Image (tube, rainbow, N blue to C red):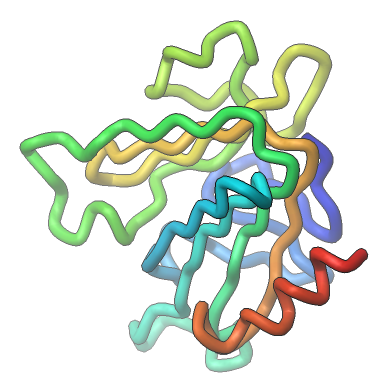
Length: 156
């Protein structure tokens, strides 16, 4: 998977977008997943947390858009769900393609030969694994207001 305009940092909960570190574990809450089967596009949405530790200058919402999705696997949350666990990312990174059935780990913050499946694991043990051609982050005011941005990205 090729990442456009952002990278995943070594700590596996932060991304680097336009020179700014954004912590998807502490500063953002996961809100929504949209999968457009015919378009082979997946969108994962976060909104900035209301916590007083969050810098007001941080983007109010982020959407991870994966295009050319070939594989999408989702494992449900555990019964011992962490409070608000599905809102809180535990790790994001790449996993070995040969280990698609393993929904528990992240191997690296960078894609490499044979390690291109993007894995997202949440505090509730909800796990999402994606094999796609490319991914980018859109910045905006939330899922409802990003339709135009996503449409524009599809035209590229």
